[in-house]
Image (cartoon, rainbow, N blue to C red; front, top):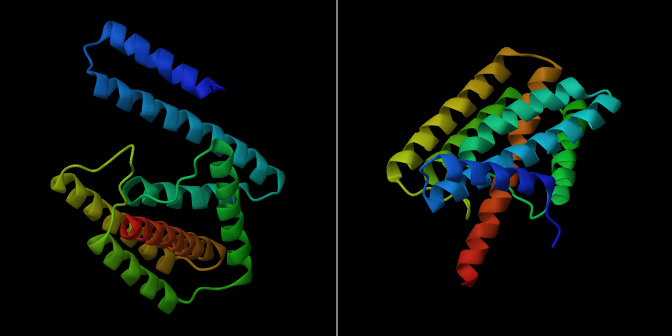
Length: 195
């Protein structure tokens, strides 16, 4: 089995932490997972950044990335099994945001409707738990719901203040991210029903 550089780095870091700190097995596993995620995401963002610089859309990519990261931290989203699967899906997502924002305008009414859908989803279903990172406490779940509503409210408010291309980037990023979340949620519901 092939071991990636990111796996090796995270394992070495955890070995040092175990050697010099008083950490439980679970804490070390969480550290390893967190470090691996940070390294993989950093590598993916760097590669995506290079591609979007080459096609002249770096600012749009970074702006959309900021929106996505602020939402996904608390609400979750689609996960791919491999680095390259995640990379190509992410590339397609950001490219779709750029193309759609150039071709189609989302009216303020559509954005207001999108905001209502987000808030309803957050109140009823968010956040999407991960198998590796479950959300155990109700207090943490409520905290994440509150943070999600604040983040979505800020982006919608900024979107209503802006006009032109930046407004479109926000609108399309939010719309495509909600579509992704609904696909994940639908898949999760189907899996639970089939058990």
